[in-house]
Amino acid sequence: HKAAVDMATALLGKGIDPATVQIALRGLYLQTLEFCTSQEVLRAVKGVANALIARRTLTGGEVKRLVFQALLTPNTDLDNT
Image (cartoon, rainbow, N blue to C red; front, top):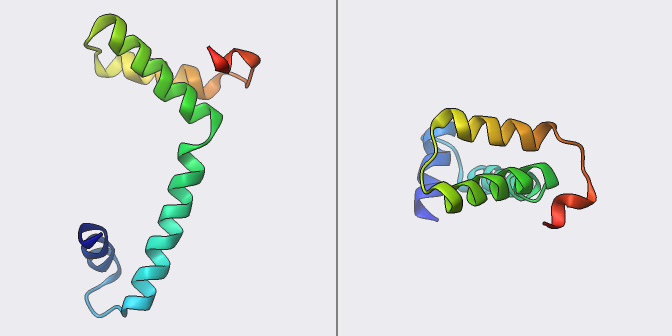
């Protein structure tokens, strides 16, 4: 919590009041929840995780390909695999 408050304070300015920092952090938290629960992001994380289990290492290009593939693939019933 302290690290998040310190980071928000640094980004918003040192003279910012605590209520504004709290509002900013709450907004970022809600955006993060929305982002992390999207089907596309979950598919991307699952794809990278499965590739890491299979190969143990991935290049940056491989990770990018897996993420873009997941983000560009339409939602299907295959998400439960």
